Length: 307
Image (cartoon, rainbow, N blue to C red; front, side, top):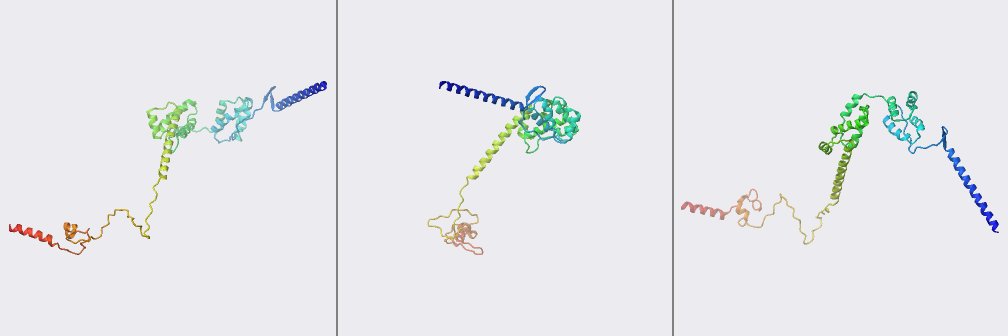
């Protein structure tokens, strides 16, 4: 019995080793099938992780092609970048690149410079420079968008300058063309030496203004939500309850009703005579005498004359 158990263990170990070697062989075969043999060396083909950009035709935006193509061909091995870049050209653009043999050498930054020279029309520099020098910040235009437009114009207006020199031109035009009042004061008080510094300052100012604007909107909404309750108007069709007092409302045209007093007891009539109208005793066209007042005055005058 012990001999049989040992033999079974040996058989199971042999079968396990056979399966392991078979799995390794299959893995090697799959690796070889997914590899490309170039110049006697085995190289695994890599698949780019980013989608290919749109193909370029004559008249399209070459600056966009150059920016997208540089990122796209970086995912390929150096010996496959020529084919990858050529696949991004279409129609007459591909024919020009093939006839001029621009893509025969190593793909570098100079390759894109030559492609731009052959695939784009060289613009007249003077109108572009005039457009760059007259470019100012438009109303409702953000500072970052203004700087982006200046950089695009600087590339076309000063193609012979390097990137650092173009940034200096952009910085000078920012000082002239900025129209934001807060940024104008800040840049005059402290001139910026780099475009990125100006962008950082503008970003802080815009964030503060946006925060202040949001606070003002929130305050207005909170004030509008807190409103006094509407005042209910009295229903005159029903008699008011006992003890109800009508609220006082001043009226400049209101005159009190005539008082139940005689002319001799009325203070208004004693003071103003027949000209009194507020008490209601003297109507238009009526005349009343005051014998007591007249007699008193007449007696006083008579006494003074006799004396």
